[in-house]
Image (cartoon, helix red, strand yellow):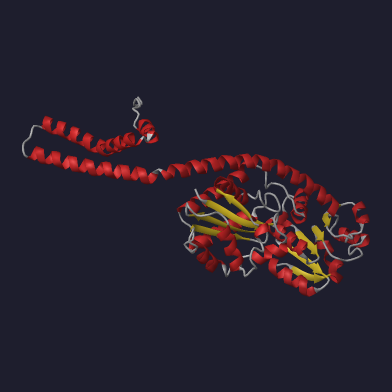
Length: 422
């Protein structure tokens, strides 16, 4: 089973090297076409994300493993000879199958158990199919990988807990409010963390968001993506009473939310609680706000403790997932070994069917000429037996003459008489 995975990821190379070997969406079709035309490659697929670029190739049985594929990556991206070879990893056959299953399940990701990679692999699989780069083997392999990933998600807790600041903050909000759909979120800042938080809030069902930032232009840009309302930091106090959820992450050297502003907001809200998360360092929310009733204030340290606990929980689940994947790999390899016999079985059945038809036609002609049916049945049974055993018998005699004991033992096992089941 000449399967090879050749790749580079967050463990083997820094971002300044990984970014050199990314296959952008518009170049992927032509890259797949060229890769599939390499002499040794039967089937191929490329997965390329910010954290990994991997080639999945089903090769000709006699092909070598590694160098031609590595050289092809360097040539495609215009890199100097052997400039990334030290960052590449290679997996073959059983190890390669296990790697594919682990990647699809999020077990090889920068954030253990993250689900995005499964969608990225499905996109890569569809792209390869559209280019005709996959075939029977990779089609079966990736369908099995997707099934294994689903089983990991269903039967383990590897993706159950928040392991990013943004997801942990939204997870805490869920513990305070039963239904996020009915809440308004005020996000302060417009950087990457706030953008990721907005995505988690939107996925969690929050329908109304306000994004406040020092510059209105950046706030508006982010608000447009999430159909939110954009304001400047100067308008914070005006909108503070609307906020059920407040999450802040700015680069301000001093707090942007003070005690008195929160106290006034609580009076306007008639003491309906506010859930606050201060992700910033230095802090955006005056620590004294935590002393106010009806305020739930968490800091980056609180979130980090949650993330640490959740990561340990995921690691424990990952060990269980590893055992599950090992079982899936065994099942897939068994299935593929079974498929190896299909062509031989088809040929055997086709030959037997042709001999049956030939003998049956002769028997019909004998009956049409008035031959005794008993004699015809005897003729048909004897002739069919002789024809079916002629080629195997001849090959076994040749094996005996050539001293091929292995073939004789295989024939003894293959044709050993077994009692019919009752």
